[in-house]
Image (cartoon, rainbow, N blue to C red):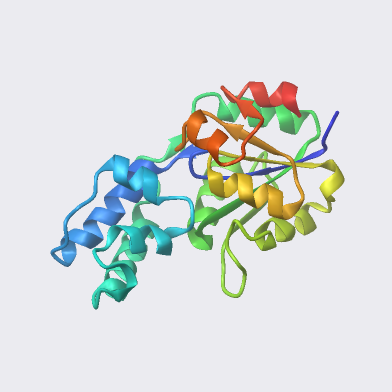
Length: 214
C-alpha cells in the first residue's frame, strides 16, 4: 500500500455539482436583472470557492453595486437546493466502499461553503469518509494548504502517507502547496490538456483506477 490516507476534492471529483451551482447562480443573477450564464461558463468559473464563482459571473465583479446582494441570494438559494440535481459520479460509491474496506482513512476538502459540504457529506459519504472540510472563517481556501492541514489533523496523518485527488488546476496547486502527490481525475470539470498545462502528471480515467493507484 503506497498510502493510507486520501484527501478528496468534492465538486468535479466525487460529485457532479455543476447544474445546481449554475441554477443558483442564474437565480441570483436573474433576481437583479443581470444576464444569465451557460453551464459551460459556470464550468470555467468554479474551483476557487463560491464567492469567486459569483465574482466571475456578475458583470463588473465585486465592483458591481449589487454584488453582495447577488452573492447572498446565491448562497441562500444554493443551501436550499444543493441536492436538486447533484449526485455522485458513476463508480464513485463503489470505489469509496472498496477503499474504506481496505482500511483507507479519507477526508473531503472543498472550497464550497461548510454548510453545503456538511450536508452533502452527511447524505452521501458518512459511511466511508471521516472528515469534511469546507470554506470557513479565518481559514484560507485552496490552493492554500490550510484546509488540507485541518483534514490531515482530523485524520491523524502525515504527508508521507497521504495522497490528494482532484479534478482541477486548483487541486494540482493545492496538493503541491500541501506537500502531497496529486492524482488528477478526467471525469470532472477540466480536460486532460488543461490539466497537463497546469502541471498535472498522474491521471485516473475512471474512479476504479484509483484503487490500483493508491
